[in-house]
Length: 198
Image: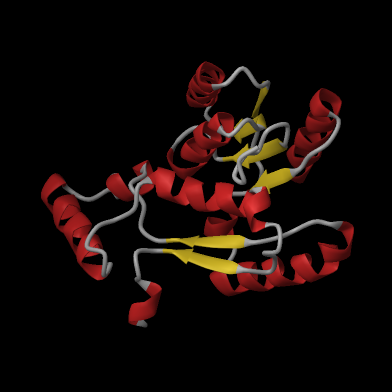
């Protein structure tokens, strides 16, 4: 078995309809994970599920839900348990947008310390600017949007913004056996932006 194989693992991925969440779902399907895909946009979510089924014959459970609703989080949890009997990997893509980075960092480290004795690893990626609908459709005029995208590229030492698959690869690595001794870690996947200290 490859070190990055997720064969048989049950992975719940939020924001799976597009962007980083979709790229993560597609990569996890390729790596053999059984998937629980969650998003508000039903048509796009179903399209992602169909693509995942085309990549791998592993089961996919799609749940249309708002993860900011506590009741829906409980529904997602119960549906996951009913369908798969457990959960191995939780990718909450939305957290980086809903919680301040410092709060998320502290949550990651505290949760990792609390759960380490139970064999649970908790890590976080810090995505740089990524080619997703949020970045590409910023609400500016076409010219202003083009200028905005060029400015974003210039801020990254690597000279470009990331593709969603680059975030998905980092997430897959952290979820895989190859990262079995990594926990409480915060990994910038930002093309060197953090190192610039701007």
